[in-house]
Length: 237
Image (cartoon, rainbow, N blue to C red; front, side, top):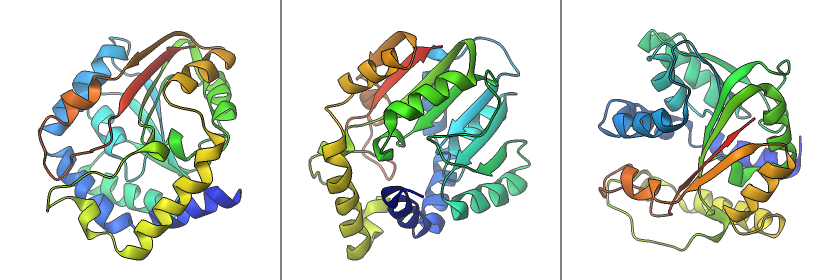
């Protein structure tokens, strides 16, 4: 495994329990409806879509989409995240499936999915160009990529509410988070402009960028608040 990928997986393996608890609260909060409204802007308007949730973590998006009748597979490089996602799936009675897999090289046949979705993942990938090319291969013709992310390697420190999860992260974890950003930053250009170029090179068309999604999802400063402005990139295979 690439060294930076090992560091990212190690970082998230230390946050599984706390992260899972917060994502479950998000799943049962008003935020879930906000996220689904964003998905409905891009997803084909039919049921039973085959969807790949890349970097699923403990399964938030997978559970939301599966509950609406879609056939969802979530993948993540962090094995403990997948273990937790499977545990939560059982407790929720969700049909979502979860596999340990590298986001940059998912092992599925070409043209397997109607949609690829992801949140707060692509900034951690050292070979984002290769990932976009692979995801393009996995999509059926006309399939859609929906990527929610931010330029985290260039984010500015911002105050957080007292009940925010990051307030509970210990100093060593925060230092590791900053070190990961320091390692990745020279590999990346400013986003999301860079993503648009990579997606075109990967063969995608119909590329759109929405930088206003941050205001819609995080209009309220609560425990789920993200101070770094996220964007949506959608693209069609």
